[in-house]
Amino acid sequence: MRVTAGEAEEAAGAQAPHRVVVFVRPGLLPMELGIVHRLFTTAADDSGRPLYSVLTCASAPGEVATDTDFSVNVPHGPQVLRSADTVVVPAALEDYGPQERGRLAAPVRAALELIPPTARLASICTGSFVLAAAGVLEGRRATTHWKSCAELASLYPEVDVDPDVLYTDDRGVLTSAGVAAGIDLCLHMIRDDHGADVANTVARGTVVPPHRDGGQAQYIDRPVQRVDGSSTAAARAYALQRLGDSLTLEELAGQAAMSVRTLNRRFRQETGTTPMQWLARQRLDYARRLLERGDEPVDRVAARAGFGTGTAMRQHFREVLGVSPRAYRNTFRGGPA
Image 1 (cartoon, rainbow, N blue to C red):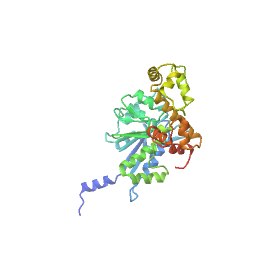
Image 2: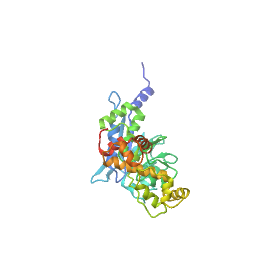
Image 3: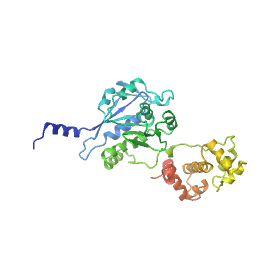
Image 4: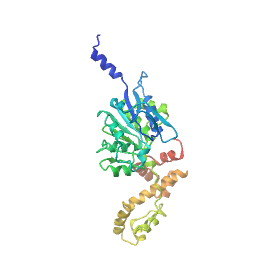
Protein backbone atom coordinates (compact mmCIF):
# COMPACT_ATOMS: atom_id res chain seq x y z
CA MET A 1 0.00 0.00 0.00
CA ARG A 2 1.35 3.40 -0.99
CA VAL A 3 1.67 5.97 1.81
CA THR A 4 1.23 9.58 0.83
CA ALA A 5 3.52 12.33 2.07
CA GLY A 6 0.70 13.72 4.18
CA GLU A 7 0.00 10.33 5.78
CA ALA A 8 3.69 9.84 6.50
CA GLU A 9 3.89 13.26 8.10
CA GLU A 10 0.77 12.53 10.18
CA ALA A 11 2.18 9.18 11.31
CA ALA A 12 5.46 10.80 12.28
CA GLY A 13 3.60 13.46 14.22
CA ALA A 14 1.61 10.79 16.05
CA GLN A 15 4.90 9.30 17.25
CA ALA A 16 6.22 12.56 18.65
CA PRO A 17 6.26 12.49 22.45
CA HIS A 18 4.12 14.99 24.32
CA ARG A 19 6.42 17.89 25.19
CA VAL A 20 6.47 19.03 28.82
CA VAL A 21 8.34 22.26 29.52
CA VAL A 22 9.21 23.20 33.10
CA PHE A 23 9.54 26.95 33.55
CA VAL A 24 11.83 27.65 36.52
CA ARG A 25 12.72 30.84 38.32
CA PRO A 26 15.57 31.81 40.68
CA GLY A 27 15.19 30.18 44.08
CA LEU A 28 13.48 27.09 42.65
CA LEU A 29 12.96 24.01 44.81
CA PRO A 30 15.05 21.22 43.19
CA MET A 31 12.68 18.49 44.38
CA GLU A 32 9.80 19.98 42.41
CA LEU A 33 11.90 20.10 39.25
CA GLY A 34 13.02 16.50 39.81
CA ILE A 35 9.45 15.30 40.30
CA VAL A 36 8.39 16.45 36.83
CA HIS A 37 11.42 15.00 35.07
CA ARG A 38 11.34 11.68 36.87
CA LEU A 39 7.65 10.91 36.50
CA PHE A 40 7.07 12.05 32.92
CA THR A 41 10.29 10.61 31.48
CA THR A 42 9.54 7.14 32.88
CA ALA A 43 6.12 6.96 31.22
CA ALA A 44 6.24 4.64 28.19
CA ASP A 45 3.89 2.68 25.97
CA ASP A 46 3.80 -1.12 25.65
CA SER A 47 6.73 -1.09 23.23
CA GLY A 48 8.85 1.01 25.59
CA ARG A 49 8.53 4.19 23.52
CA PRO A 50 8.74 7.32 25.71
CA LEU A 51 5.41 9.11 25.87
CA TYR A 52 6.84 12.44 26.99
CA SER A 53 9.89 14.59 26.49
CA VAL A 54 10.76 17.06 29.24
CA LEU A 55 12.70 20.31 28.84
CA THR A 56 13.63 22.89 31.44
CA CYS A 57 13.71 26.58 30.62
CA ALA A 58 14.11 29.92 32.37
CA SER A 59 13.70 33.56 31.47
CA ALA A 60 17.31 33.36 30.29
CA PRO A 61 19.45 30.22 29.81
CA GLY A 62 22.30 29.59 32.20
CA GLU A 63 22.83 29.04 35.90
CA VAL A 64 19.72 29.37 38.06
CA ALA A 65 19.98 29.54 41.85
CA THR A 66 17.94 27.12 43.95
CA ASP A 67 16.86 27.28 47.57
CA THR A 68 19.79 25.00 48.44
CA ASP A 69 23.59 25.33 48.30
CA PHE A 70 23.73 24.31 44.62
CA SER A 71 22.45 25.86 41.42
CA VAL A 72 20.94 24.32 38.27
CA ASN A 73 22.30 24.84 34.77
CA VAL A 74 19.27 25.49 32.58
CA PRO A 75 20.13 25.09 28.89
CA HIS A 76 17.00 26.62 27.40
CA GLY A 77 15.57 30.11 27.28
CA PRO A 78 11.86 30.91 27.08
CA GLN A 79 11.61 30.24 23.32
CA VAL A 80 11.05 26.50 23.97
CA LEU A 81 7.73 27.43 25.57
CA ARG A 82 6.40 28.00 22.02
CA SER A 83 6.53 24.25 21.38
CA ALA A 84 5.10 23.13 24.73
CA ASP A 85 2.13 20.79 25.02
CA THR A 86 2.21 21.13 28.81
CA VAL A 87 3.90 23.84 30.88
CA VAL A 88 4.68 23.25 34.55
CA VAL A 89 5.53 26.16 36.86
CA PRO A 90 7.18 25.05 40.14
CA ALA A 91 7.52 27.24 43.22
CA ALA A 92 10.42 29.64 43.85
CA LEU A 93 11.69 31.58 46.83
CA GLU A 94 10.27 34.81 45.43
CA ASP A 95 6.78 33.39 45.95
CA TYR A 96 7.27 33.65 49.70
CA GLY A 97 7.88 37.39 49.74
CA PRO A 98 4.48 39.11 50.12
CA GLN A 99 5.76 42.09 48.18
CA GLU A 100 6.24 39.86 45.12
CA ARG A 101 2.80 38.31 45.13
CA GLY A 102 0.19 39.89 42.97
CA ARG A 103 2.59 40.89 40.20
CA LEU A 104 4.86 39.30 37.63
CA ALA A 105 8.40 40.34 36.82
CA ALA A 106 8.66 41.57 33.22
CA PRO A 107 10.83 38.63 32.04
CA VAL A 108 8.40 36.12 33.56
CA ARG A 109 5.39 37.79 31.96
CA ALA A 110 7.16 37.92 28.59
CA ALA A 111 7.99 34.22 28.84
CA LEU A 112 4.42 33.22 29.69
CA GLU A 113 3.15 35.11 26.66
CA LEU A 114 5.06 32.65 24.44
CA ILE A 115 2.98 29.67 25.61
CA PRO A 116 0.54 28.42 22.94
CA PRO A 117 -3.12 28.87 23.87
CA THR A 118 -3.64 25.12 23.40
CA ALA A 119 -1.00 24.15 25.99
CA ARG A 120 -2.00 22.63 29.30
CA LEU A 121 -0.83 24.70 32.29
CA ALA A 122 0.10 23.34 35.71
CA SER A 123 1.71 24.66 38.87
CA ILE A 124 3.33 23.04 41.88
CA CYS A 125 2.96 24.57 45.34
CA THR A 126 3.14 28.38 45.24
CA GLY A 127 3.76 28.35 41.50
CA SER A 128 -0.01 28.92 41.48
CA PHE A 129 0.67 32.57 42.31
CA VAL A 130 2.35 32.92 38.90
CA LEU A 131 -0.67 31.47 37.11
CA ALA A 132 -3.00 33.67 39.16
CA ALA A 133 -0.98 36.82 38.43
CA ALA A 134 -1.06 35.92 34.74
CA GLY A 135 -4.87 35.79 34.90
CA VAL A 136 -5.28 32.17 33.87
CA LEU A 137 -6.86 31.09 37.17
CA GLU A 138 -9.70 33.60 36.97
CA GLY A 139 -13.01 31.81 37.40
CA ARG A 140 -11.25 28.51 37.99
CA ARG A 141 -10.83 26.24 40.99
CA ALA A 142 -7.25 26.18 42.28
CA THR A 143 -5.11 25.30 45.28
CA THR A 144 -1.64 25.89 46.67
CA HIS A 145 0.30 25.05 49.83
CA TRP A 146 -2.10 25.20 52.78
CA LYS A 147 -0.04 27.94 54.43
CA SER A 148 -0.60 30.18 51.40
CA CYS A 149 -4.22 29.41 50.50
CA ALA A 150 -5.67 32.32 52.48
CA GLU A 151 -3.31 34.77 50.82
CA LEU A 152 -4.03 33.40 47.34
CA ALA A 153 -7.75 33.84 47.97
CA SER A 154 -7.23 37.35 49.34
CA LEU A 155 -5.04 38.53 46.47
CA TYR A 156 -7.18 36.91 43.79
CA PRO A 157 -10.84 36.85 44.88
CA GLU A 158 -11.83 35.80 41.36
CA VAL A 159 -10.08 32.45 41.94
CA ASP A 160 -12.02 29.64 43.64
CA VAL A 161 -9.34 28.55 46.12
CA ASP A 162 -9.79 25.08 47.65
CA PRO A 163 -7.45 24.68 50.64
CA ASP A 164 -8.24 21.02 51.30
CA VAL A 165 -7.29 19.16 48.11
CA LEU A 166 -3.95 17.84 46.85
CA TYR A 167 -4.52 19.16 43.32
CA THR A 168 -7.14 20.68 41.05
CA ASP A 169 -7.87 20.24 37.35
CA ASP A 170 -10.13 22.86 35.84
CA ARG A 171 -10.42 23.08 32.04
CA GLY A 172 -6.79 22.54 31.17
CA VAL A 173 -5.31 24.48 34.07
CA LEU A 174 -4.03 22.45 37.02
CA THR A 175 -2.63 23.42 40.41
CA SER A 176 -1.25 21.40 43.30
CA ALA A 177 -0.57 21.77 46.99
CA GLY A 178 2.89 21.83 48.57
CA VAL A 179 5.94 20.11 47.05
CA ALA A 180 5.11 16.38 47.23
CA ALA A 181 1.60 17.05 45.93
CA GLY A 182 3.41 17.65 42.64
CA ILE A 183 3.73 13.86 42.47
CA ASP A 184 -0.04 13.48 42.72
CA LEU A 185 -0.49 16.17 40.07
CA CYS A 186 1.92 14.62 37.55
CA LEU A 187 0.47 11.14 38.02
CA HIS A 188 -2.99 12.60 37.47
CA MET A 189 -1.88 14.17 34.17
CA ILE A 190 -0.26 10.91 33.04
CA ARG A 191 -3.39 8.99 34.04
CA ASP A 192 -5.57 11.47 32.18
CA ASP A 193 -3.38 11.26 29.06
CA HIS A 194 -2.69 7.53 28.88
CA GLY A 195 -4.83 5.69 31.42
CA ALA A 196 -4.39 4.12 34.84
CA ASP A 197 -2.07 1.31 33.71
CA VAL A 198 0.63 3.70 32.51
CA ALA A 199 0.29 5.93 35.57
CA ASN A 200 0.39 2.93 37.92
CA THR A 201 3.55 1.65 36.24
CA VAL A 202 5.21 5.03 36.70
CA ALA A 203 4.10 5.12 40.35
CA ARG A 204 5.46 1.63 41.03
CA GLY A 205 8.78 2.48 39.43
CA THR A 206 9.05 5.56 41.61
CA VAL A 207 7.80 3.68 44.70
CA VAL A 208 4.94 6.07 45.40
CA PRO A 209 1.20 5.40 45.70
CA PRO A 210 -0.68 5.83 42.40
CA HIS A 211 -3.34 7.75 44.31
CA ARG A 212 -3.43 9.17 47.83
CA ASP A 213 -6.63 9.22 49.85
CA GLY A 214 -7.85 12.49 51.25
CA GLY A 215 -6.41 15.93 50.64
CA GLN A 216 -4.00 18.33 52.29
CA ALA A 217 -6.55 19.10 55.02
CA GLN A 218 -5.08 16.20 57.00
CA TYR A 219 -1.65 17.88 56.95
CA ILE A 220 -2.75 21.29 58.21
CA ASP A 221 -1.42 21.91 61.68
CA ARG A 222 -4.15 23.32 63.91
CA PRO A 223 -2.93 24.03 67.47
CA VAL A 224 -5.51 23.75 70.21
CA GLN A 225 -7.10 27.18 70.46
CA ARG A 226 -6.09 29.55 73.18
CA VAL A 227 -8.89 31.21 75.07
CA ASP A 228 -8.84 35.00 74.94
CA GLY A 229 -10.70 37.61 76.91
CA SER A 230 -13.78 37.77 74.64
CA SER A 231 -17.31 37.37 75.91
CA THR A 232 -17.48 33.67 74.98
CA ALA A 233 -14.07 32.90 76.50
CA ALA A 234 -15.50 31.29 79.61
CA ALA A 235 -17.74 28.97 77.58
CA ARG A 236 -14.88 27.97 75.31
CA ALA A 237 -12.50 27.35 78.22
CA TYR A 238 -15.17 25.21 79.88
CA ALA A 239 -15.69 23.19 76.68
CA LEU A 240 -11.96 22.64 76.05
CA GLN A 241 -11.62 21.10 79.51
CA ARG A 242 -14.57 18.75 78.88
CA LEU A 243 -14.31 17.70 75.23
CA GLY A 244 -15.17 14.13 76.14
CA ASP A 245 -18.43 15.12 77.81
CA SER A 246 -21.81 15.52 76.15
CA LEU A 247 -22.11 19.31 76.16
CA THR A 248 -25.26 21.27 75.38
CA LEU A 249 -25.83 24.82 74.18
CA GLU A 250 -27.66 25.61 77.42
CA GLU A 251 -24.68 24.44 79.44
CA LEU A 252 -22.24 26.58 77.43
CA ALA A 253 -24.57 29.58 77.59
CA GLY A 254 -24.72 29.22 81.35
CA GLN A 255 -20.94 29.34 81.60
CA ALA A 256 -20.93 32.56 79.58
CA ALA A 257 -23.81 33.98 81.66
CA MET A 258 -25.94 34.68 78.60
CA SER A 259 -28.90 33.23 76.74
CA VAL A 260 -28.49 30.58 74.05
CA ARG A 261 -29.53 33.10 71.42
CA THR A 262 -26.94 35.63 72.61
CA LEU A 263 -24.28 32.88 72.80
CA ASN A 264 -24.93 31.91 69.17
CA ARG A 265 -24.70 35.51 68.03
CA ARG A 266 -21.54 36.28 70.01
CA PHE A 267 -19.89 33.03 68.90
CA ARG A 268 -20.42 33.92 65.25
CA GLN A 269 -19.01 37.39 65.83
CA GLU A 270 -15.93 36.14 67.69
CA THR A 271 -15.10 32.82 65.99
CA GLY A 272 -16.92 32.97 62.65
CA THR A 273 -18.89 29.80 63.38
CA THR A 274 -21.56 28.37 65.69
CA PRO A 275 -20.80 26.92 69.14
CA MET A 276 -21.52 23.34 68.02
CA GLN A 277 -19.46 23.67 64.84
CA TRP A 278 -16.61 25.14 66.87
CA LEU A 279 -16.91 22.31 69.40
CA ALA A 280 -16.84 19.65 66.66
CA ARG A 281 -13.65 21.18 65.24
CA GLN A 282 -11.96 21.21 68.66
CA ARG A 283 -12.90 17.56 69.16
CA LEU A 284 -11.47 16.68 65.76
CA ASP A 285 -8.20 18.49 66.50
CA TYR A 286 -7.94 16.77 69.89
CA ALA A 287 -8.59 13.36 68.29
CA ARG A 288 -5.87 14.06 65.71
CA ARG A 289 -3.35 14.67 68.46
CA LEU A 290 -4.35 11.54 70.34
CA LEU A 291 -3.92 9.48 67.18
CA GLU A 292 -0.55 11.07 66.38
CA ARG A 293 0.92 10.67 69.87
CA GLY A 294 -0.61 7.51 71.30
CA ASP A 295 -1.66 3.93 70.56
CA GLU A 296 -5.13 3.89 72.08
CA PRO A 297 -7.80 2.08 70.03
CA VAL A 298 -9.92 4.26 67.77
CA ASP A 299 -13.04 3.69 69.87
CA ARG A 300 -11.20 4.89 73.00
CA VAL A 301 -9.94 7.99 71.18
CA ALA A 302 -13.48 8.68 69.98
CA ALA A 303 -14.79 8.53 73.55
CA ARG A 304 -12.05 10.78 74.92
CA ALA A 305 -12.58 13.33 72.18
CA GLY A 306 -16.35 13.44 72.64
CA PHE A 307 -17.48 11.67 69.47
CA GLY A 308 -19.13 8.91 71.47
CA THR A 309 -18.41 6.03 69.10
CA GLY A 310 -15.69 5.09 66.67
CA THR A 311 -18.26 5.04 63.89
CA ALA A 312 -19.22 8.66 64.51
CA MET A 313 -15.58 9.74 64.59
CA ARG A 314 -14.79 7.82 61.38
CA GLN A 315 -17.63 9.60 59.62
CA HIS A 316 -16.38 12.98 60.83
CA PHE A 317 -12.81 12.22 59.76
CA ARG A 318 -14.01 11.19 56.30
CA GLU A 319 -16.13 14.31 55.89
CA VAL A 320 -13.47 16.79 57.03
CA LEU A 321 -10.10 15.15 56.29
CA GLY A 322 -11.01 12.63 53.61
CA VAL A 323 -9.36 9.70 55.42
CA SER A 324 -10.22 7.27 58.21
CA PRO A 325 -8.77 7.66 61.73
CA ARG A 326 -6.67 4.53 61.18
CA ALA A 327 -5.26 5.86 57.90
CA TYR A 328 -4.56 9.19 59.57
CA ARG A 329 -2.64 7.49 62.38
CA ASN A 330 -0.64 5.40 59.91
CA THR A 331 0.30 8.54 58.00
CA PHE A 332 1.65 10.36 61.04
CA ARG A 333 2.94 7.44 63.12
CA GLY A 334 4.64 5.54 60.29
CA GLY A 335 2.37 2.51 60.73
CA PRO A 336 1.45 -0.10 58.11
CA ALA A 337 -0.68 0.92 55.14
